[in-house]
Length: 115
Length: 111
Image (cartoon, rainbow over all chains, first blue to last red; front, side, top):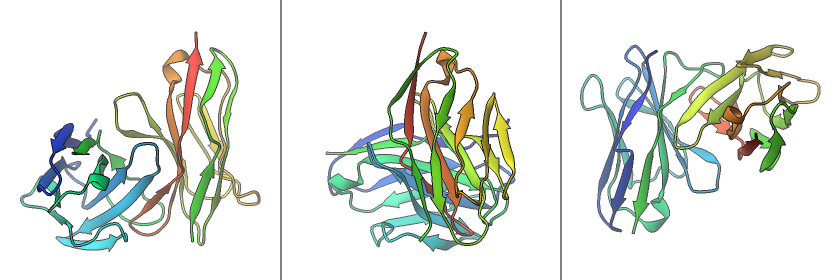
């Protein structure tokens, strides 16, 4: 069964450093998403992406964040200058279509720790 | 705005017990409702979904019915197993792009 994959599974970085989290969505999916889950809190939407453009973003997704589809298979989330509060589990998701009723399929997550 | 409220955990049951995890929602429009499960050390997996009122989603012995009159989508299973131990998230499709999740309920099953 096709699945979303993410690398790395864990990342430790120093405050102020740049990190890039990588995702390979399901191959025939066209819509891509990032979510995060701070330890003990809800899973929160960050951004959605389609046709090389951001479709929707939350207030969390400020200028420190960016997303990119650098090639035909990868989808990345970059945090330019990490803060302590960026420590969280980051989930990538993808879907074939979009809409209120569409199912998003999630990857296993990358656990980011900012020291 | 749209939101999801689910019962707080942790929930601890004995094997073969009946499970209910309550979930209520607030939404405009007619979103799909989902239950996702997160097993220890793994990502979010779709457990079941329902797309309209009175639909019942089911998978692996779990069921949930989309109740518009009570704005609920409670998760039930008749006989839980140790392997069901996980965190369960109720969620709804909030916009064309976004899923809103509840806070999660941790379930532990004793042998």
